[in-house]
Image (cartoon, rainbow, N blue to C red):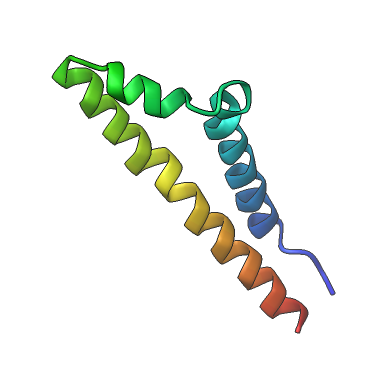
Length: 75
């Protein structure tokens, strides 16, 4: 069976993104919660929302889909 390079590339991108998103959490488990609570400016809260929507919330579905797609190809 031949490997699909685009699928492997997207999977690697999503894994790298997950690593970058979770790096702050590895050092301090309450990093984002403390940052959200200490943010008093509206811009800070908006930046946290954008961070969650465009980075953290997008990488899990991409990785999950690619994992399932790879599994389906093996079957």
